Length: 255
Image 1 (tube, rainbow, N blue to C red):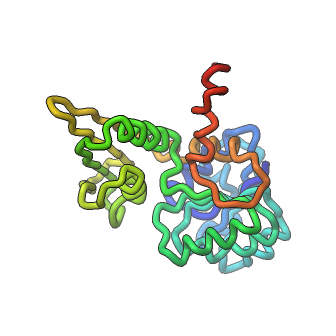
Image 2 (cartoon, helix red, strand yellow; image 1 turned 135 degrees about the vertical axis):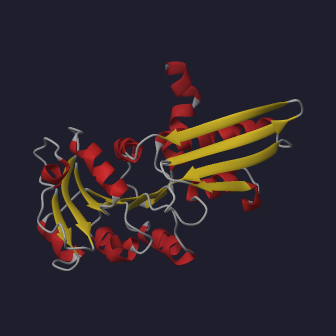
């Protein structure tokens, strides 16, 4: 499966590193705004042994439409910014290319655009695409169903430069039906990302914790989604759509 990657910051580089080392996927190209690395090979730049072309292109030298015609891909993966969707979305949907977005924050206009694009192609969006944090979300919701009256607090810790409340923490709060006032944020150097859900019962607490040790965790999450997003039916999909089949009675019995 051929992949085009949008965004080549710290996380984008880590994701590219994981894709390059996976035999079932080919990193065709990376598309970014800056032309500083224009024409460079991602495998060569990252020092990874790979036959993938992984050529770096910039918006200053080629349009997304021209790039998709010259080097078509099966799927685009977005680790850029909330404005990236407007750059590639229409072109990808017109070409029937699957879209996987891991952008943590989208405004209402971007969310509306996701819905619009999903009428024409497969669109997947997760504000945190790591497998572990989405498993945490499942477990937290299950515990909330058992004890809907329990006290819940969410702690989220990230690197110093991250602005605003974590999109993952907001999603956790929404899923657990608590307000954002129950989210506590910490920003400090050396932290990649950590989320903790605290359930306060009488005389005891339960803590569910997920911590990303390195940004490659986002790459392994992308691979998991790409491998399991087998449908060709246009629509807007989320991580729950991929995980639910694993929790079906039939799957449990087979295991």
